[in-house]
Each structure stands twice: as structure tokens, then as C-alpha cells.
Image (cartoon, rainbow, N blue to C red; front, side, top):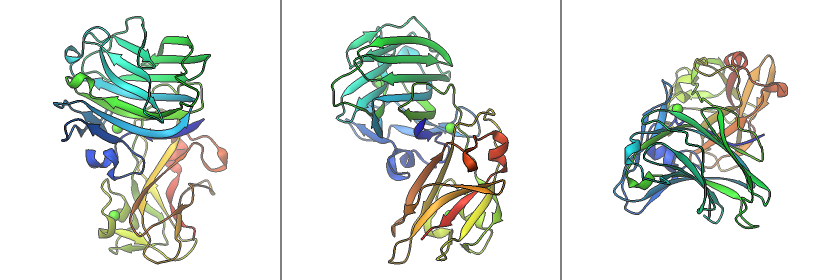
Length: 344
Ligand SMILES: [Ca+2]
Ligand SMILES: [Ca+2]
């Protein structure tokens, strides 16, 4: 299993951050008319946030670039505000998989009575048994897509298998699944998205996924100097990174800060991955490298080494197992100390 990304939206202070100002390679908004089309809203589970894609007087879409691969598994929570505003018949486009050349590979459409349909290659309709999507209700939708001459599309709604297509799903030999896209459906209906995951090169959907934000709630062991001079966790535990207003700094190779985190409450006791998000920059002219690090039961597991620039960069690591390669559990996440270390 290889996670392309996990997205709960809970750490974005504003929609602007989710649309590309914060983390690298995040969502990119495009439209025909300009203006804001999305905002943060109450999440599927509270506390937490979702992204609200709001009606605009023009066509709009919202794209995420992912590593190109022939196989993808995508899961998402979706809540359409007013089904009656969707198009009749085959319905309005809501979600799509696209190639690295922006070619349409697969669309999810929803019509005005809540029937969900798939269209492959932008044209071939795959009629589904009617399975109504309800207005203003969270549904969890998962797609398994294998792009090949002997390919496959499988759809789950709320954990139940709804449909499987076996056949040619290949657009052309060069195409890979490389973009995920939400469409502001037919300009007429707003909707919310939350708890998205994307996997490469696997066959099996994870089942309904919930993502919970954990923040540092106390210092466990610290080596970085805090600015201002207060508990280190206070300088880094913030939804909106405040850059040089409050931070922890060190020029000592090996220096490590570890924090205790608030406890998981809403997530079931199967943990697919831990995603660590942080922002960092360097001040000196030489190379500086940092890594995220997790300590548990006297063992550690690290994120990738990251070279810093003099401007802040947002960094995200996804750790699919804990120290020693041991699967995560709720108890192990709750016991873990999480932080960062200066590598160089
Ligand atoms: Ca959320
Ligand atoms: Ca800060």
C-alpha cells in the first residue's frame, strides 16, 4: 500500500491555504470567472473542518496532482446540499480522475434524484443500479480504478459494494491516473468534501476512513530554543502557522523536540497511517536538513530528510507503520511522542 495523500482539512485555517498556499502540491482551484468558490465549514465529525465548494456563477473545478499510476484507490466523504439543483438524467459531474495530460478518465455524476453514475473516458456511461444519494447527508464513496485493456472500476458507497465494471478502461497507452478533480456540479449545487484518501498501485479500498487532527499539548523532551521563551509546544501547536512570530530554533545537529499530543477520540481502532505536518525554514547559508520523528516504547521512526530554504516550507510525511514496522493502533498513537529533529 502506498498513500498518495490523506486529507481531513482540519489543519487549514482558511480555504486559501487548502487551495495551494500552505502545503506543497495541494488543491488547485480553477474557474472561468474568478472569485472565491470554496470555504472551510463544519467537518463530517466535530471538531474538525470540511471544504465547502460553493455555487459560483461560472464553471469551476478543484484539482489535486497525485503521483502518476495505472491503479488508484480513492475514498471521500461527500455531502451534496441540494440534490434538486443537480442536472436531470445522467446528472452533473462531481468528481473525476484525469491523466497527466488532463484527459478525462472517469467521472462520478449525480442526478437530481440522487442517482450516482460512472462515466469512463468522459463518454461511456456505466449505468449503476439506482442507489440514492440523500440531500445534505454525508456519504462515503470509494473507487478502485485499474486502467488497462483488462481493467476494472469498482464503486463502494457507505462501505457497500455497489458496482464493478470489468473491461477496457484504458484511454491510451501513455495515460496514467495523475489528477483528482472536483467539479462544481453544473454551477447549481454546492457540496462539502472531507476525509479524502488516495492510494497508488493497490487493488483494495480501505473502507470508510475518518481523519482526526492531533495537536501538541505538552513538551515531552526539548532541545530547540523557544521564541518567545515559553513552552515549546505552544510555539508549534497552532492551526495557522505564524512563521517568525513564534517558533523553536536550533543549530545543533541531532537536536530533537518531542511532544505529547491530544488523544484520538473519534477514530476507530484501525489506524491506516499517521500523517505529520509541519512548517520550517533555515536562517544560515549552509545546508540545513530536518526530519519528523516519532518515539514510542523506546523506538523511533522518522519521516524523510527535508532540505530547508530561507522561506518557510510546509512538509508532510505519511507513516504507514510505527516504530519497528509495527501497525498503528489507537493506543499506540495515543502513547507516541511526536516531533522533529535537526539532521544537518
Ligand atoms: Ca475534517
Ligand atoms: Ca508558531
